[in-house]
Image 1 (cartoon, rainbow, N blue to C red):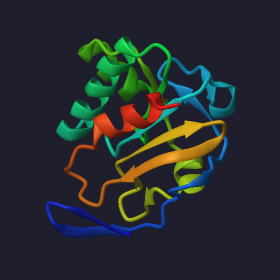
Image 2 (image 1 turned 60 degrees about the horizontal axis):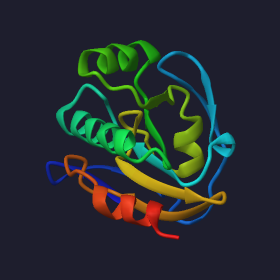
Image 3 (image 1 turned 120 degrees about the horizontal axis):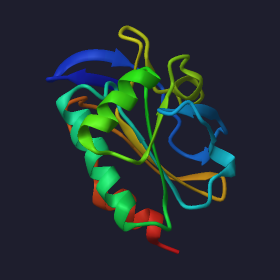
Image 4 (image 1 turned 30 degrees about the horizontal axis):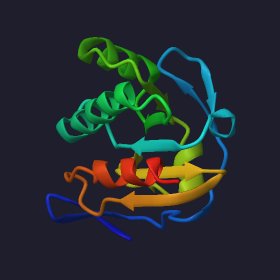
Length: 158
C-alpha cells in the first residue's frame, strides 16, 4: 500500500487489516505497561505518525473526547514519540486517555505499519473485538483524518 504525504509518495507498507490482532505490550506516557489482550472489548486503536503535528493532534484530541463519552470502549493511541513527548503533549492539551509509545516498533512491525524511510507509523485505526480485527482503516494520505464515526459505529455494534 502506497502512503503519500501531500499527494507525494512517502513510503510503501503492507499493513495487517483483518484476522487475529497481534498481542502487544507497550508503555504509556506514565511508563505503565499496557497489554492489548488484558483490555476489555471493544478496543479502538488509533495510530498516528507524530503527536506534535496538526493532524495527529486533531486525531488524538478527537478520540480523547470520544473516550470521555464512551466508557464501554477501551481507547489506545499509539505513536513512535517518546514517553516524555507524549506526556508533555497530553499535559499541554489536557488529554487523559492512554497514549502508548512504540519507539522500538514492536506494534508497528506486528501490524505492518512502519514507514521505514522516516521510522514513523502509518496513520490508521483498528477496532478489536474478541482478539480479532473487525475494522481497519489505513489512511493512504498521511494528512487525512480517519473516519471517526465508522470506527465508533463498528465498536458499538453488537
